[in-house]
Image 1 (cartoon, helix red, strand yellow):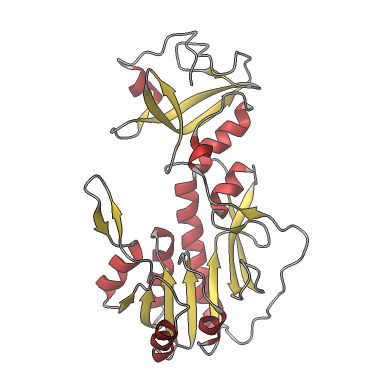
Image 2 (cartoon, helix red, strand yellow; image 1 turned 180 degrees about the vertical axis):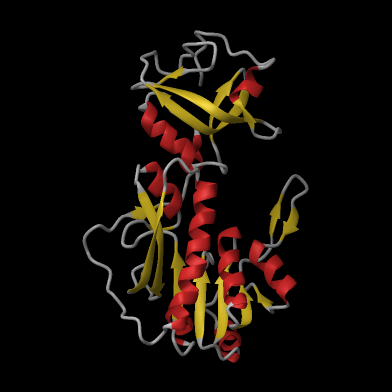
Length: 301
C-alpha cells in the first residue's frame, strides 16, 4: 500500500520500520520540525526524521495541516492510508479524509482507557496491571475513533521508558496485521463506559511529595522514569529517583530513617534503588551512598 506515515519520537520508529519491512511503500514521513535542545540549543531533528532520511523517505514537517497549501501537498502523495504514531499535531478532517482508507492511529493504551497525551505514564501511575496498544480509525475527536485491533502488555515493575518501547514494538506488529486485513476487519465503536484521560505530565508532578503513600510514590517513580524523572532535593542538589521499592515501615514523612536512604512517607516508606545526581549518569543506591552519605534523621525536601 502507499502509506503516509506520521510520527515524531522514538515511540514511532518501530512502526515506521515495520511498515517498510512489510513491503509497503512509505511515500512520505510527516514529523514535528527540529527543536532547539541541549546546552547549546542546537536544532535537533526528531527520531522519525532521522530514521526516514536514513531510509530515503521524503520528510515533511509543517507547523500546521490546516492550510490549503499543506493539504494540497498531503493530497499529492496519493496515499492509500495514513498511519499515525505519536505525531504531535491535530489532523483536521480534510486530512483524515484524503487517503483512500483514512488514517489509522497506533495508540499506547487499551482504549477507551487513557485517551490523550501520556497514556503509558498514566497507566503506571494509576496502578494498572495491564495496558497495551489499540489500532483505531482516526476521527476528529481526541482518540475517540472506532477500534480495529487491541493487544495487551503487562506493566509489572517496568518504568515508562521500558514499557513505552514494548508497547511501540507491539503496536508496530499490530498495525502491520491490520493493514494486511484492511477492509475486512470490523470497526468496533469505543464504549462510553471506562473512558479516562491521560493528561500531559506537568513539571510540578515530578517533585516527590513525601506525604503521599509509599506505594503511590513508587508508581510515580516508575511512571516518570527515565524522563523527566521523579526527584527530591538534598543539600541544594536535585536527585532523581529512577527505580524504588516500598517498605512496610513507619517514619516521619520525608525523614531518612536508616543508613540506606529509607525515607518515611505518608504511609510506609520508600527506598530508592536507582538514582541520578545532577549532571551524572544513573547509578545504584550503593554507588550513590559511597562518599555521599545522607544522615539518618535528615528531612528531605
